[in-house]
Length: 228
Ligand code: CA
Image 1 (spheres, rainbow, N blue to C red):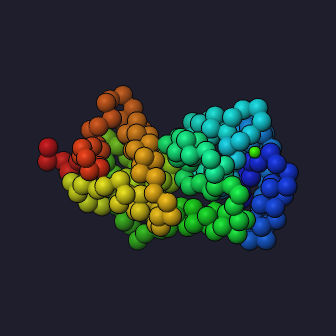
Image 2 (cartoon, rainbow, N blue to C red):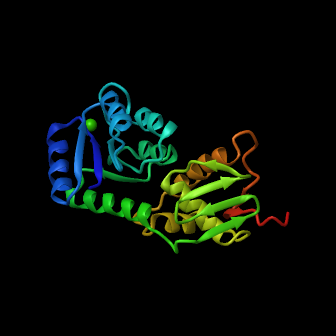
Image 3 (cartoon, rainbow, N blue to C red):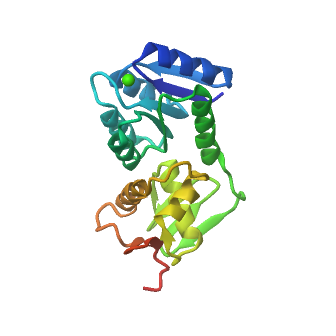
């Protein structure tokens, strides 16, 4: 059974979300603040985290940042309708999707399932992509850059796999967004810039970060095709 950690300080919303997720067949863990959430992430290793950004104590965005420091667990953030800045920052910090409050619990369950489907999407068992000194094992969702393993979030992995399927092809942000989300409910193209930034930092921790993924000004991004 998949375990979902719900981080929400409003008991009524937390209870409703728990009911719907349990009804959908998930095991649910709850935390009402950031410290509780971080402790549960370490101790119980949930499969998905639903994280409200408006938390007492440690700010939700700081909780997100802390989780991302050592975990690639899929994270779905809950934000207030008025907080577009938080939403974009959350996606840039590595959240995989977001739901705006007030939301329908059914929609939340559907988004949790969609995130898990993306994580579970298993291509042919032996599918490997090699682009220059990057190697992607699509079945195991592992990446080697110059022979070193790189730990990516599900969204970063999808992004890199999309680029690596056609090295040299130039993608617009909107095309990349479609590719990583599978469906595009609202387009937050700036979020792609955030994921690309994280991806570059991980692929090339000690360099300028632009060796693998090239910016095509005015268009988007492309993976180096090794012919430069
Ligand atoms: Ca709240």
